[in-house]
Length: 258
Length: 255
Image (cartoon, rainbow over all chains, first blue to last red; front, side, top):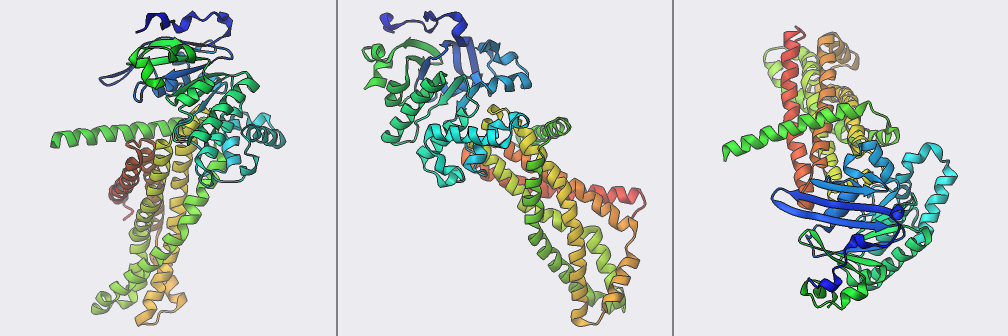
């Protein structure tokens, strides 16, 4: 590994009170397959970190552990001050309201219209909100992604890029403090991919969110990353800015930038 | 190889038992998903009615036409409404309704939940703070448990009407005579146990469809496997439950 670039992710100069995600010594295995090994990671408020790695390197497993969809074998995952593996279902739900997740497959509910898809995360707050409030939140979220006209359409009637935008709108509707993006540009053409990447940056600026973006689309990485954490063999290999990593002669790093 | 298959069978039986246990645990916990329940009642109950009705009508008609020659041979043609009504109400209508529902509803639930699983829609529900087990499984199992008995009762009535038409193809049986004979023959022990067992059929169809769908893996191939195995296992369970029901009613002296 190129030592001059081996800046640890936890050497961030930001104030610790701004720390929104802190992962220490994370381990996760599936049978004999050790996917994550002693993984460490920190995300500060307003930051956008891209986790870069080959397919099958454990990137999606990492974000699923952060949101509590998978339980780690060892280690701690502090999200907004709470250790995710220690939380019960209700406590986890309260944290999940503050953490948005954009799925790789979009995960839009096929049997529901765009409006119903966007209203779904508001169900927890249904009693506190009247119909007008819900409607204005739905319209605001759709406005953020520029797709107000699709409100009564079914997901099957939308293009891949539109579905990704609607999925992002659904993620935004609860105005989360942290957004996890699992390969947000996979399967999209370069133009749409750039549009989605720009949208991620716009959303981050508008709502001052912190983001963890899982990707190996270097165009997307270049646009959204404040910092890149490289995941190699299940552990954090290096952490630095796009510009610095681009200069690296380490084959494991430079192969991504060709 | 045989021991491995037996081990898999035991494992799956244990998993289904745990899944059923979780259903009862989640059943009484708020929040109650009434909107989804009524939506499922529409799809599972109302949308299945035409298929169940046509099948029940044909079964009533066919059973009557097939039974007639034997009864004529013994000079017992006048017993046709009695014999047909007992066999339809006790056995044929509830079991055929359950099998039709296992095919239509069981496979539908298995495929729907299976595709939701492989496209991460169930995970998306979970991260949006909704309990997917309660929203998807509890509502569907309650719906099948309540709707299949209703469909079976309607199938009873329609199959008897089919029987009336069947009885009039080769002979003449008046409307009043047919129904008088039917209601004179049918007793508490014929009707109530046959309705009670349909609740168990409905529960089995719902729980197996949901279990198979909820535990789908292997991508789109897994969705097909889930739908297929939901039908096979729930149909088999319908027969096993029917056998148990017959034994129980026999022990209770209701046969």
